[in-house]
Every structure is written in structure tokens, then in C-alpha cells.
Length: 349
Image (cartoon, rainbow, N blue to C red; front, side, top):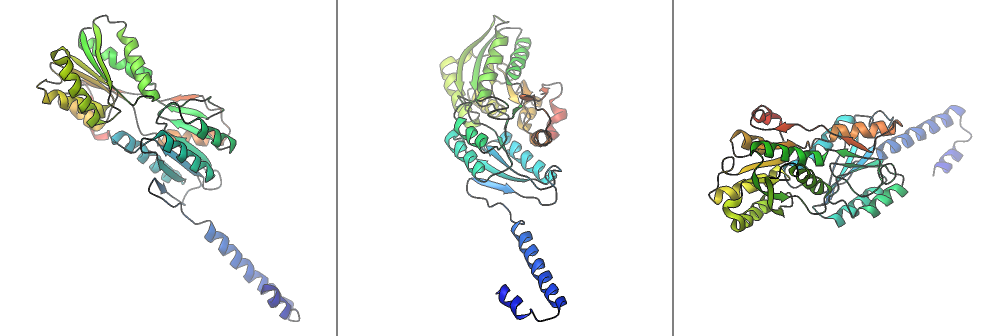
């Protein structure tokens, strides 16, 4: 049709032909802009946040990144996802969120889906330390950089993924044990409610706690069972342990604040007094835990900050600029007890 139009006007003055080509150029450029203004679709297993105001970290174009979240269950995970979304929006990135809903197999599929979408980078919060190898390989073959946040996965930094961003989980467990030993004068019969089996954070928080206990012969773990980082499951687990151990229990160590809240409920239901005849220590630093410390039922909690957005995108932008990224980027965590919990409640998640 365009050729026919041009053919019919070959005998016209040259300025008409020039006008026709200018008109066609305007139409074509408008089509290109329309194609580039689309947003990411969401489905039952994902959500997407799109912002077109920024330049994606100053790279000259808006970058599209993926975030594979292991699940969005509980305050900690929800706060982490929100932090990633908020920081992406602030910096002008487009971010595609995938929620594995607590399934490692689903997380593998989610990462492979992000690779197929050809995103510019992928952040992964691994559910388990093992099981993601094939997904990481797919990203490596597609030359898409992967950053692990808050939990580790098997692989070699600089090869299978760029780096791990997170806390020193061993140190978190050690600090919890140190505080408990000081508070109980080095004598306690302890129940440990651990996190999800197979997760790096579970292994490390257990190791740090037990390593510190070796310095205190009077500190003994009399029962250790999983609460799977879930309040209801931890409450049920604690109820079962109370039936078996009864008055022997003088202290409880949980790998997360959500589980501490469940354990406290179980203790109260059994007629025990958390904070008095049973000392409870935990990890995370969420708002309900700080309130429980102020109220006297929880003894202390080691912070594990979920707000990874700023650190994650800072690290990505450094990588894009060609800066050297260390294998591990470790956050500094605070410690909350009766002396300072109340002053941080307002800023807690």
C-alpha cells in the first residue's frame, strides 16, 4: 500500500514526497514507543511492580529484575518482599516477583521462568541450601547475574551466583546463647525450636548456639525440634515438648520471633510463666517480639533485618558498574533486650 501511494505521487513536487516520508517516520516512532510502554503481567504465583520514571540505576534504560521469594508467609517475609518492591520503585526498576510458597521445586520453576523472561538480574531468597543447582545453572548459561539474599544456597560465588547478601547467622545463634548463659548464670535446661530443615539459616543458628554452649557446662539442650519458622507449628511443637519434659524446662531458644510467640503461648497455656520461670530468647527483631520483651515475656532477640531492598540494589548497581563484589556482604545486626526494646518498637516491622 505504501509503495502504491509513493508510485502515484512520483510526478508530484518533491516537497510532497518529503512530507509523506516524514509522516511515515512519525507513525513508526509512535509504534515503537507504544511497544516499549507495556507492563509486566501478574499471575496467581507472582506480582509485578513497574515504574517508568527512573532509569534503572542510571544505566541509561530501565532495568527489569526478578525476585524469587521462598514464600510470603509471616511478618519477616512480607517485610522483605515489600522492601524489594519499594526500593525498585524508588530507583525506577521494573521488578517481577515470584512466590514459591514454601516449595523448593516451585522455586526452581520460578527462577527458570525468570530466566526465560530474560530479566537483567535475579535476586533469590532460597528456601533450602540444596536443590537450586539446576536453576542457578540455567541463569549462568543465560548470562543473567544472580544474587542470593538472606539465605545461602550451594554453589560457588562469582560463578554460580555473584554474592550472598545477609546476616551472619552463626553469630546470631552465638549471641543468643551468650545472653542466655549470662541471664541464667550458666545453668539452664533448654528447649530449642529450630527453623525449616535444610535451610542454611537453620543450620547456622543451631551451630552458633551450640558452639557457645560448649563454654558453659551447665547449659544443656534437653529437646530440639523444628517449628519450621511458623508460629502455629512452633506452638504445637512446644506443647508436645512440655508434655514430655514438664518442669524440667527452664529456657527456650527459637530460631525466629514468630516461633518464640508460639512457644510463649504454649508455655502460658501449660501454666508456666515466660520471663520468670522460663527464659525465652529468639532471633529476628520483629515488632511483636520487641513488645513481648517490653512486657517481660520474651527475654531478648537478635536482630535479623528483612529490609534488603537498599543493599540488594546498591550491590546490583556496583556490579553493573564493574566493581568488585565480595563473596559475602554481611549486615550488622543489633541486639534487643529489656534495656532498649521499647525505643525501637515504632520502627520495627
